[in-house]
Length: 148
Image (tube, rainbow, N blue to C red; front, side, top):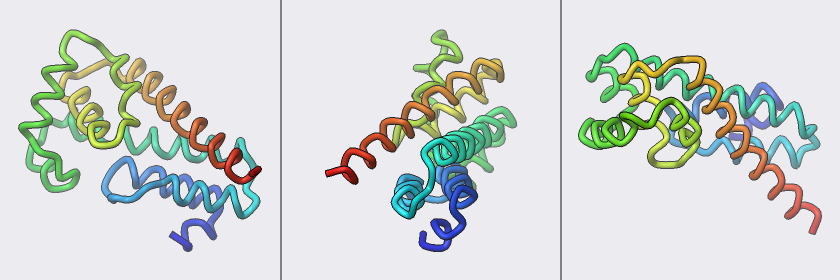
């Protein structure tokens, strides 16, 4: 984590991207480290949101390819759980991409949206909004704690 923090905004982008795809770690740790080291608010917000959104869209793309073996191998997702999430999403639309930031279920939502061939424009829009809101809340908490 220290290496990513030392890269500043690029480290935040990389951590956020990887956290949304293959590595089981929290991008919030790197984001907090960069903020506490003097990183500026908006560059951190943009780097974290774009990195995490692109990572989420990677999961969407793997779902769109429809290769179950890749999903098992690279994302390590339980296929039964993926099917349950996919069933929940059916009929609800692309707005469900807003919840891709949710721990434990977000990757399933992104992959399921890809499987269902949800329209990419609305998926990107709602995913971006959800992830931006997540990082905004986190950064506000960091500033509140740091101010005390």
